[in-house]
Image (cartoon, protein in one colour):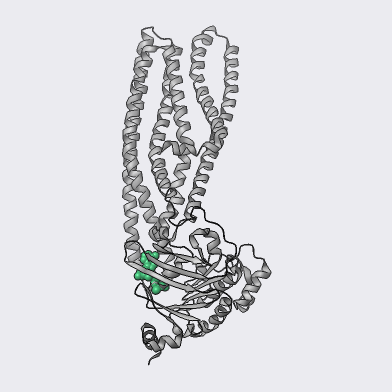
Length: 571
Ligand code: ADP
Ligand code: MG
């Protein structure tokens, strides 16, 4: 897994090397000061030559100017490295999620996905920068300090360094515990995001049922669970930091006691003693740094694991090998022995055969839950069939690229989804390169002219999240305009007017009739009055097609259709 992680550094090799070299230099320059103090006290001070001390200080100043520049490079360019890696990861993840299948979104919560694409990656960016760099600097500084200390007095150096492995061992111990705690924390954050997302997008329902208190309680539960896991993580962190603290102070005191003893015994000069104390403080820094990395590591790794999980989930609907883009279709559709079921459920459709000629309008009717929507969603391959195949103009839809297949099919549904933005943007979603005259033409054909003219901002009017600022009929017209712009040869109208009042429905039926002209059209309709003009009526029931034919013939057959008809219009 570490190898996968480091593969993200590849495009930034230069940046990484630059950052690394500067960091190493900056770290080594830190070690110069104690050595300089040693020389000043032992050599320059006894000579009484003030000038030399001044020169030494000017020399040091020069070194520090260089060092401060190195610090700038490390902080800015190092973080740039981390940010670039984070950005790449986020892009990859977003790309992958865009291509996921309907099934994937059936089974994943929006809030969880949002959480993974935002929070999880933030920590990864931090660790991408600090992880390897800090670790390496810390090791270099420790080694440098040890070398100099060994040079000054090897016995004291060895005695001091015995404690380092102990500290690192303790850190590792705590890091293991923390890794588990952070993993739990991430999953709690995701739950909590999912709850908030669900609540806010459903707030109108919450308030309509006056269930605010109930929601507040449910949220409090999530919130508290998050609090508890976070507390556990921080308790482990606190233990780690307090134990490290006492160990570090122990080293300082140990050096102080032994050092003074060595000086009194005459085995060390004053300058050497002071340098030693300073160096033992310099090497505490790297240990802290190693600690910090070890603390950060589990968090980053937990996030990276979740990232990989999501990145590696292959979409179950994708272009088949050898799939070709199909430029133009007439719109002959055929279902050959199609069988389909959702997960863990009985099959919805079994061995369905249905042929539709190009330009024909076929109405799908049947009891609710019979599988009409499901049948239609197999055509653009929102789901793949379990058995059997579907063809358009005789070409298996799996031999077409998804993009070309879907470009030939337009779907108008009952619940229109509009994006937060302007009317223009939402209509242009049908064809992204459409210009204003195309858009206005579509507006006209969808009978939206009056609305657009009445708005002070016209096409640029913002319609709010999911189009909350529009009425149901206006939203539906907008989605019809979008379809005029897309201009697909195959059209699916899935209960497009079921949510509207009778008057609006009648008006929109007109626009829909115009839209379906010259296209192969599948109309799913609950209200039978709206489908009398269809060329053929197909009754979907009992996992397949129960009856089909013209309205009069079906009535005469006294089957399901005539029963449905009687229920709606009376005998
Ligand atoms: P219709 O459009 O005829 O009312 P649907 O095609 O929407 O019926 O649904 C057919 C059956 O499939 C129903 O039993 C429904 O519960 C089930 N179903 C629909 N969508 C899904 C889904 N995304 N995941 C699982 N089951 C589903
Ligand atoms: Mg349906």
